[in-house]
Image (spheres, helix red, strand yellow):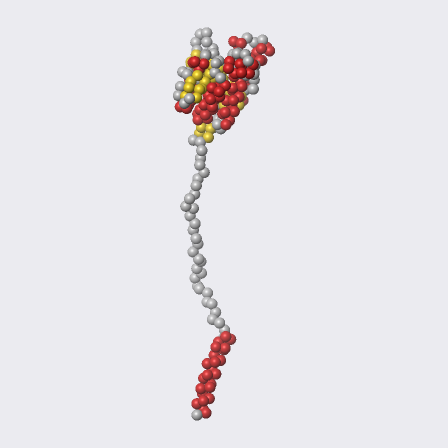
Length: 266
């Protein structure tokens, strides 16, 4: 009986002590795998990649000058001086040319104006008015030789009255434009093409804003208008003697938009 009791006590003791002994036994070592596995990489796809919008932009250089620099508009001279005059020392076509230059710049076109009052110089040197094209030629020639221009505009004011130089479109009045191209020189065809292109762009915006292109040449006519100096030269008659400032400004905006469209690169 005593022997049996000892056996049971020994078993109970072992069962009690076994968990304690387990804590002191060495832990099973981590056996590294023979194949090292990397976690799968995460591949990210840009599902909405937006390319920068490529906007068309005007590329090119434009030169503006006026052979008859004192040509003026009667409504403007009357508003300034109280006198109606077709010629003025400051309120003239050169000032309108400055507005055109600024408008071209706003439309993304590189533009500059020949800073010269040729009529004033001619008066000082006593050069007769009919020699205007010869007088301004050296200044224009120097510019086109020193720099390449995509369009050269000799800006004038026509002598016609407002009934023939004004158009109304969508309840807005515009000064009409005429292009004059000399035919007695080698660059005639190229200059004529440039005039046709600009005329087309303007008429797209305001139908009828331009008159027919005037081609001049032959005996008793200049036939050049200094357009033999460059392949992109045109003479622009902006409105007539009776057009007012508002009408001129409207047309200047149309010219600016049209030149920009003409020089725009897609």
